[in-house]
Length: 106
Image (cartoon, rainbow, N blue to C red; front, top):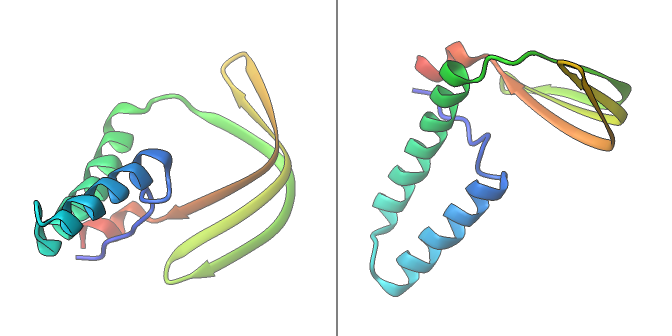
């Protein structure tokens, strides 16, 4: 099974990683179990986003950089505008990482 580490650089993912590192360092947790927890975290986040998020977002902005590597798209937008329902948010710079969710279940 392919595993993408998409959510580990999010705030919650970095906090989880730091906590697991501390537990491994103190001997409370084995490194193997810590890795299993991180893999399960990525799977859980993917499943939650697929099943619970129903809102559609429109994004417009200047495409600064894009790349496609190992079936993962990375886009960096400048002066981006996010439209959600009747709200609008402007962001000076945003990084979007996207992959085909079908690859996660192979």
